[in-house]
Each structure stands twice: as structure tokens, then as C-alpha cells.
Amino acid sequence: MFIANSRRFIGRWMCSESKLSTGRIIAAQRIQLRSHVSRVLGSTSLNHGSQYASKTDIWTPLSVRFYATRAQRPKAKSTTKSKSRAAPKKTAPKKVSSTKKTIKSKPKIKAKAKAKPKAKAAPKRRKLTEKQRQEAAKKKTLQKIRDLKETALTPPRKLPSTIWLVVMMEIAKNREVGTAAKEAVVKYQNLTPEETAAYARTANQNKEANELAYKKWLESHTPDEIRKANLARLALRRQARTKGNKAGAKYRLIKDDRLVKHPRTGYIYFVMERHSSGDLKNVEVSQLGKLFSREWNGMSNEDKKKYTDLAARDKARYNAETKTVYG
Image (cartoon, rainbow, N blue to C red; front, top):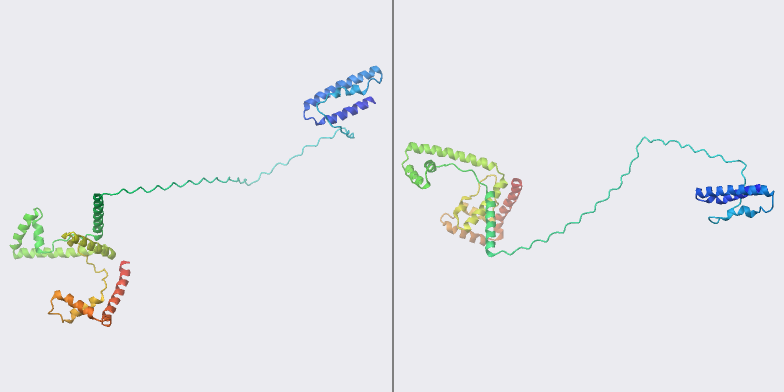
């Protein structure tokens, strides 16, 4: 009976202490229990079942507790000695997928937009003196003249096309202009008929060569370029005239049959009709302008309508040709 109670006590104690988290404490207490049970069993065999072997002898070593535990009911004895440990489950080998796993790329971190640099304040303009202003205006005028000259185009240089020019160019090859001019005058006045005929042939050949070179030069430029060149030549002539310089006379208008003729006004048509009538043969040329203006201003709108209609028709012709020729 005592042995059965001891076994029950040991099982109950083992159940209560099964919750210890450390294996070392459980092993130490097991050793204490074994020594206690062997000591109690030895005392009972000596006293032959005396009653002094009270329960206090069994509970004395158990009074030392590491912490308080709650009493639990003893578990029912299992019929089987020990449950067989469950066999570890065999995990099926993972199938290697034929397709590679797509690695998701991490979203790129957007770089912070750089702050726009602040616009620098415009430097303050310094005030120019009167002399500096004049120099700046002069530079601007010179640059404008250069641009006009570039736009005006330069035709090919002409060969001497008269007998006098042929003689002058022949003598002035290796001499100064002053002495060459005097000698050329003397030679030109004393030319023999044979020499005159020879110089005339040379002059005619040069004239034909000039015409061919000029025609080739014209065809190398478009009509619009020739039109702009004539406008630039007019501007250069006006500028030279204001300064009293005669150098503007060399900027003559370029003749080109491809250029569109400007439209005529009603007044011009009236003047052309008056000239063709033949009533003004005995009138001086200086008085013709005043006479035409008085007659034109004295006419009514009905009388002028004949000439204004011709002018409107000519203006329409000019607009149409301008679009086709100049683009």
C-alpha cells in the first residue's frame, strides 16, 4: 500500500513539475526523489511497518519549492506502456519548375528633380557718352552699307568695248594713269585706217564677250535675288546722294527681262495718251508736266474712269506675275 501511494505521489509530482522550462531543474529533483524513496523504504523495513513512518517523512523533501504550483488531477493510466512515436512525414521532393521564376524588379526610386537655377538679373546698362553714341551710330551705318553692298551683287567686269578704251587699256598696262592717258590721246588722234579697223574688230569682240558673260551671270541668280539687288542699289544711291558723294552713280539698276514690270497708274496712262496724240509738239518739255497735271486735276471722275480701269487691270496683272516669278 505504501509503495502504491509513493508511486502515485511520484506520478502526481511529476505531472505538476512537467511545466518547468529548464531540463536541469527536473533532473536534479529526480535525483532527490530517488534518494528520498530509497531512504523511506529502508526505514520501513527496519521498523516493520511502524506508524512513525508518517507522511511527513515523505513530504519533508518536497517542502522545498522553487515556485508555487496548482494541484492537478492525475491523468488516467494509459493501457499501453508508451505511445509509439509518430513516424516523421516524408515530404515529397519539390518539383523544379521548368520556367524560371520571374524576379520582380524593385521600383526605381525617382530622382528628385533638380531645382531650376534662378535667372540672373540682367546687367544694368551703363550710360554712354555723346562720343560713344556717335561711334556706335557710325559702326551701325557702316555695317548697314556692307550688308547693302553684299545684297546689291557685283556683275562681271566688262572688257573695253570701244576703240578709245581699247587704245587706253593697251597703253596703260605698264604705265601710270596720268602719263598713259596723255599718250593714249596722242595715239588715238594719229591712228591710221588699218589700225582703226583692227581696234574696231577687237572692240566688237569684247562687246559680244561682255554680253555673253552678263547673260550667264544673270542666269546664275534668281529673279527675286535680282529684285532685292536693285532695291539695295537704290538705297546705296540715296545714301550717297545725301552725303554729296558721286560714288553712288556706279550702282545702276540691273537689267533683267525676267523681272516683273511695275503697274502703271491712271495718270501715267493719261500722259501716254496725250503724248501719242501729237498735239504737244510745240510745247516745251519743262512745261509739259505742269500742263498734264492741270488737265488731270480738271477732269471729272467719269472722265478718269477710263484710265483708272486700265490701272486696276495692270495692278491685277502685276500681283499675278509677282506670285509666279518671285514665289
